[in-house]
Amino acid sequence: MKNIDRREFIRVAGGTALTIGSAGFLSGCTGRKKTDNDDTGSVTGTMTYRTNPKTGDKVSILGYGCMRWPMIKGEDGKDVVDQETVNRLVDHALENGVNYFDSAPVYLHGQSESATGIALSRHPRNSYFIATKLSNHRGVARKEDGINMYRNSLEAFRTDYIDYYLLHSISSEAVFNRRFKDNGLIDFLMEEREAGRIRNLGFSFHGSKEGFDELMALHDKYHWDFVQIQLNWLDWNHASKRNTNASYLQAELDKRGIPSIIMEPLLGGRLADVPDHVADLLKERNPQGSIASWAFRFAGTHTGVLNVLSGMTCIEHLQDNIKTYSPLKPLTDDDMTFLEKTAVLLSTYPLIQCNDCKYCMPCPYGLDIPSILMHYNKCVNEGFINDDEEDDEYRKDRRAYLISYDRAVPKLRQADRCAACGICVNRCPQHINIPAEIRRIDRYIEKLKRSR
Image (cartoon, rainbow, N blue to C red):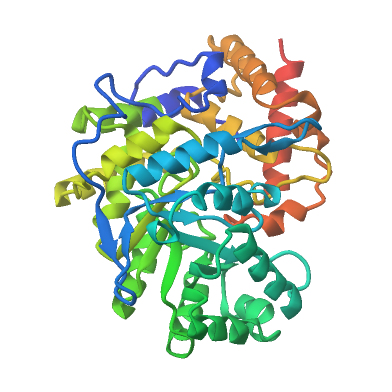
């Protein structure tokens, strides 16, 4: 574990004393930091819409990301989607103008499309747009498997067409060729687009600038109708080394008139649960808005953005985002400058770039990888990573980490069970060396346990 000087950490963070209670690690639906004056249920206007230049679709700028539907225990003890709650969330979203719903065959271990389809099919088909993906990134990419996946999506959504269909998570022309061109799948998908069963065809991207340039060079041949990119106020100019700054991605799409769909506006929730000092800066500048609202306003301010996705597990998240976009109040140039300075500050925190997407799951050895990494990030945010046994606060920090860790991650799913098999590495869209990070965290935990 890299030593982190606590006094230097606090100095960089701005000198604010950071405190934590163990309950903070158990935050769920009420986890977003808000101001004292927040009223997430109060909507002052109507939803902001953007127009798809190809189809004329009036798309709500807020999109529902269906990767994080609420889960409950089924009769067999396994996690299943809470369909009743999903129905209520979808109803509330539609009632307040949200009309774009994004899923994938791999989300929630195969449960997302069906659950979303059940909820949406209770409403007129022309009242919403369905987005889903061809998630053939595990195993051999055979044409017949891809076609079956596509047809299964149609069945799950109880529809005969898909509004926005994505090639799921491609990073370069080589990956595109292996998964879609060499097996003939892209030809099939283009035929489906020509027949109207796919109304818009695009792809989602994680990767390098060079890989994105390669995929943009294919636009003249395949005529991408839209592209889904990771964009937020931290990744705008400070993307992790293995990803590309969103400012570049959006500019390249704007050059070609390709609308963007935005994923990870909150970086898996990290930009809604920022360190206290950063939160104080955001609150001071906009006391009436939530911390999360900064991220959604930032994403929506860029006019080439068609839709901004949010995985809203809880009604308060949905209400807060509806409020932010009803209507959208774009950021000013001064706001953008302020956020860039805030991003520079936030980038000094030694966080693991996990977005809690859960693509790494399930782990064959039973680890809860996202919870391990997100718990560590939470401790970094709150200033409780402490290697200095001579520090007066070391004992308190040690106890806070160990107690909260046991509460956040069940013992049989903790870091010490990692066998470094590497399966998770190839699945991670952020290109994190997950086994290395897990081992680093485990060594830190073992040190805390041995110390007195």
